[in-house]
Image 1 (cartoon, one colour):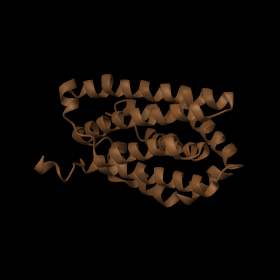
Image 2 (spheres, rainbow, N blue to C red; image 1 turned 90 degrees about the horizontal axis):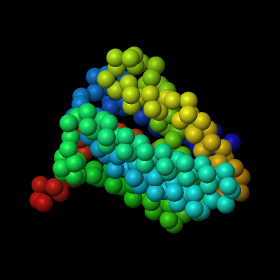
Image 3 (spheres, rainbow, N blue to C red; image 1 turned 45 degrees about the vertical axis):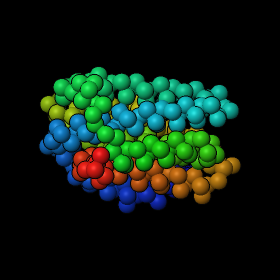
Image 4 (tube, rainbow, N blue to C red; image 1 turned 180 degrees about the horizontal axis):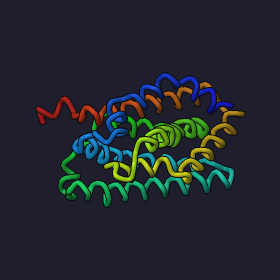
Amino acid sequence: MFTDDVWARTSTLLAAIHEHPFNAALADGTLDRERFAFYIVQDARYLEAFAKALATAAVRASDPDEIAFWSQSAHGAIAAERTLHEGYIEEYGLTADDLSGVATSPTALAYSSWLQAVALAAPYEVLAAAVLPCFWVYQDVGQALVKHSGDDHPYRAWIATYADPSFEAAVTQARAITDRLAERGDRTAMAEAFVKATEYEWMFWDSAWKLEAWPTSRWL
C-alpha cells in the first residue's frame, strides 16, 4: 500500500521526531512552560492554515464520503484551534494582546504557506498525501507519549487528544483515502508531498524547542 511505503521511507525521520528533545521532555513532563506555550501559539496559527487545506480537499473531492471526511476534519481543526486559545493559552495567563504580540515563527509560516500552496495548485491526490502526516505523525507520537503520562502529568490533556481512539479512526480514514487516490494518481508527487510534510513536522517541534525567532527582528 502507498501509505505503508511512504511510512517506511520516512522511518528514520519518524524516529528522530520521537527522539527530539522537545518530545523527550514532553514525555517525562519536564518540558518548560515557555517552550510549550510557544509551541501552542504556533500550533494554533498553523491549524488555521491546516483547516483551510482540509476544506479545499473537501471542495476538490468528488466522492461523498471523502467530502464528508475532509469537511468534518476541517471543522475539527478549527475546534482544536479554539480549544488551544481558550484552554492551554488561558492556562498560561496569556491575553489577546499577548497573543497578537507573538510573531508567527519562520517554520510555522513556511509549513502553513507550503500546505496552502499545495491545496491550491497541486492535484487533489497530492493534497491528500500532504495533509496525512499531520494526522498520522501526531497520532503516532501521541500514542507513544501517553504510555509515559499518568493522571498528574502536566501535559496529559494535550497528549490524550492525539492518543484518543476517535483520532486514530480519523487517521485510518485519511490513510484509506490516500491509498485509494494513489491507485490512479501520481505516486511520485504524492510521496514527495508526504515526505516534505513529515520534514516540516520535525522542523515544527525543533522550532518550538529553540523558541525560533526571525533573525531580522533586531532591525524591525
